[in-house]
Length: 213
Image 1 (cartoon, rainbow, N blue to C red):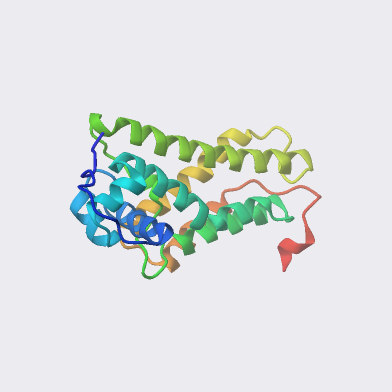
Image 2: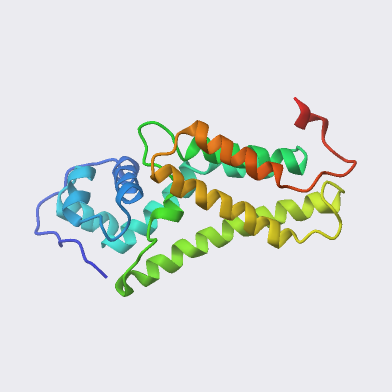
């Protein structure tokens, strides 16, 4: 675990923890966990070493807090898509097109922090890589749960493997994240999303009329 410099005495200046955490989150998002140095964090967060140490303890703890912050502030599109009272196909459409928008927002790092945070982690950062994997698995499980609900109401074929389809959709989103990191435009990501939607099985008889709006 990489400790931040400990305080050397003196009263720390007041700061906004959320603003500081957002700065750290964007830095991790852009450069990944291991490539983000403590010096980079101090500069981006605008804090002294004692302030960072008092608030976040060490780099690993700061990164974990940044992941929580990312989950709270950057993936609303996915939560809204999966919980919307629409047909299953429309929910998946909103999910994939929402990802296209979210992964290519101007002024923000491309892609998804859960995908790019530690793609090539060293053994010293394996715990971080495992945590990111857990976030990705949780996202896949949430998609599978929504697909299961759709299958139950006849939106999807009765014999369909929701786990297999969820893995496919999550894989498409992960690929979109990497494409965005490589500079893909929102239009290019939308085309990828539409191509994936064309591969989905046809819906049953209970299609929600709101999906036709």
